Image (cartoon, rainbow, N blue to C red; front, side, top):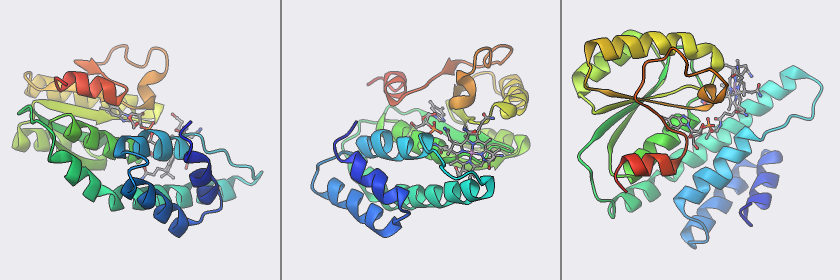
Length: 211
Ligand code: B12
């Protein structure tokens, strides 16, 4: 565990958005953590390891929303650090489009992953959450990426993922399909899917990028 994480977790647990934001900004400014650390050791665990202590499910849902809002604000506000890091990145001349399929509203992972692709040298573009199949197809047609990366968290969205990958591969056989996100970690989730890569970590992305 990162030594600065417990304080951050405590601030987020108390829904103290301002202090949580100021705390990580200070850590970044003082170079006590890197942008990668922020993504991997602060933002991801604070969401994925969230445990709601309330018996009341409704309370848990709004608490999850508040927590997500804190993370999103931090994620977007630290974008200037990505711009700064990008200056030292050697480009690999490969384009990747990152998208979440329809009904997939979990997008924090997809946004972070888009930033990893950028830091790995790709020209990376994030399209959005809950993106209908036809919009994904038209984005691929217009942007002509080398890779289409689908981020899927909810296991139930594997059906629509299968439809999208089959259509994209049928229309654009040269576009490599990358799958990532927690939905694919369930046993058998990848069976019957048409894809080129199943990646999990930033290290996987860096290897693909030639780093
Ligand atoms: C935040 C959250 C939400 C937010 C999402 C807000 C947003 N704008 O993104 C809101 C409140 C909207 C939400 C809604 C729902 N959620 Co929710 N949510 C979560 C929570 C707490 C965190 C997810 C998250 O953002 N994690 C942080 C990111 C950084 O981590 P990550 O997604 O794992 O991404 C990393 C890797 O997976 C990987 N990765 C991800 N994508 C890709 C893509 C590629 C190409 C690659 C290489 C890697 C990669 O890299 C990322 C960065 O390290 C999880 C809890 C959990 N344990 O996962 C539940 C969870 C995912 N939700 C769940 C559920 C059930 C729901 C709801 C159905 C009901 C509900 N609780 O309200 C709805 C469904 C919405 C929908 N249709 O999609 C379940 C899913 C179970 C399942 N069926 O698979 C979980 C697991 C909670 C649980 N324990 O039951 N949720």
